[in-house]
Length: 169
Image 1 (cartoon, rainbow, N blue to C red):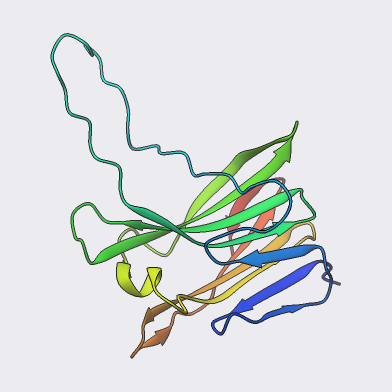
Image 2: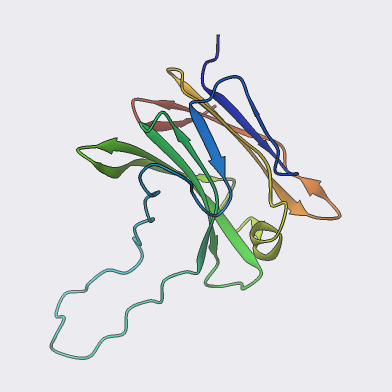
């Protein structure tokens, strides 16, 4: 039996069997604020300070959906614009746990392949066709995103969250 289940469909309507989860697109309501994704692309290099060095620019990113379950888990979907093709993007699923009064990232995974999505449909209206989470163990997560308005939604990518770790199914 699935408890604490939420499904977000492209018209912005949330279907629920319990009231423990909230799903928002681009913003959060109530409770602690959702975590900001850590930028893993900017790294300091050896010999820093000897010569001025330019670090790679951080990829443009936009949070496209968030789900909070019982103030224990937060799931986020973030669009990451490609640094090599301005039309392409990747999508990152992140899992955060609330520990000691702070949201801490427990795992992250790509939805699809690197740069396999189009930036503008992902960051536009109705980008999320389905984003479903549940507070069971293992916690199922289902994601379907808009490929383009003319093509429609992608097949659903399914994941399970076990002990805060993402496992593709």
